[in-house]
Amino acid sequence: MKGKRHNYKNLKIWQLGLEIANNISDVLLEFPKHETYDLSSQMSRCSVSIPSNIAEGSARSDKSFIHFINISLGSSFELATQLLIAKHRKYINEQNLKNLENRLEEFQRMTMSFQNKL
Image (cartoon, rainbow, N blue to C red; front, side, top):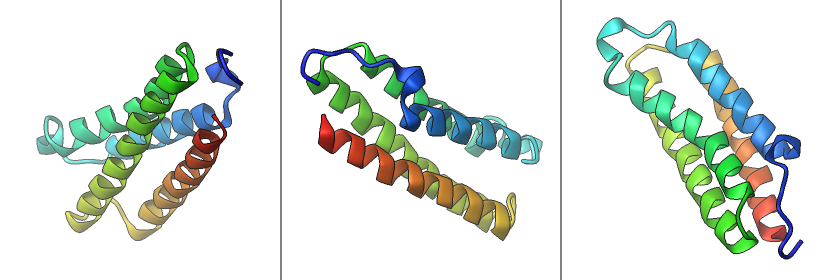
């Protein structure tokens, strides 16, 4: 893989990251208006960061790509924490939390595996 650029649209981790970002966007529609510039905004930025960093890093060398993947992974863990806060504030129910946590865990496993192959 050395020196090869990746087509991010073909990467399963990018596709899953995009799906997570879209799922979060849908969930945020139900959040109270007073959270628009607080938790909602943070969760939106975090979720968008996941596929965006994979896309940006895919145009770089593998060494640099790994850095962008690390940022993407960090955003996924940050988002997992924000989901727990949202659940505590009763903005999302247990089922939504579990579904999103499962998707994030799948993303994290796949991404770490992909990263180890670079």
